[in-house]
Image (cartoon, rainbow, N blue to C red; front, side):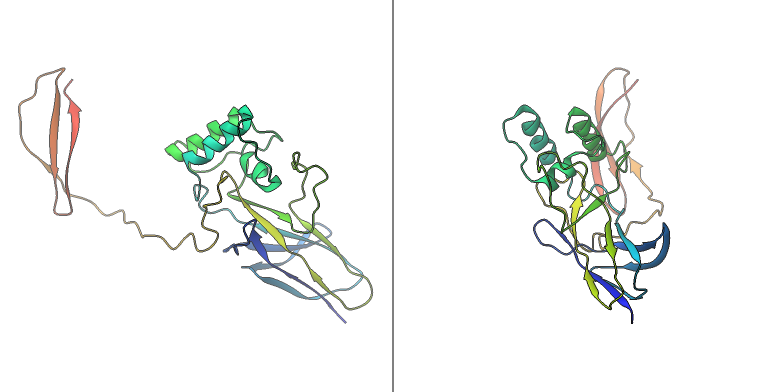
Length: 222
């Protein structure tokens, strides 16, 4: 006789999240790994305790915009309080158990491209769906893994998670297939500019030409 763990990972708005890496641990050692939601871990030994851990790290900027900064600002000022425990977790990108101007600064850096990821949290985090918040306004201690205890009889455990996109307060992050965007190339681009005489301290419009595009920018001569 063997045990089995099945599960699904969805956002608070019930969208399936993919890709996601699922790891199964026994006594602190990783035993199995799966990719995708829904997932299944089968042929598990009975009378054993397992820990299920989801991970998703790609595209931290997915769904993160200035609109999210505005929501956090309104929450801090008490103008529009965030009531969802999952959204509160999403806002705490500094992972210090509170929502402050530091979270706004961290999100702004990501939006502006100053950083390519959050400093202390992954792109996504996950909370077991079965978890009940003792105080939804203080969700910081919510577990990020699920513990499943098997007895001596064959059984199937259902271990679902709520997926939380960090920094996304308005829920517009793409839950699935975020890597299917355009392909970029590092090929060289030949450009030409019109010859013109410049005087130091003046601002000029310079035309850039190439076989791929034509544009212009304002520049100054020093």
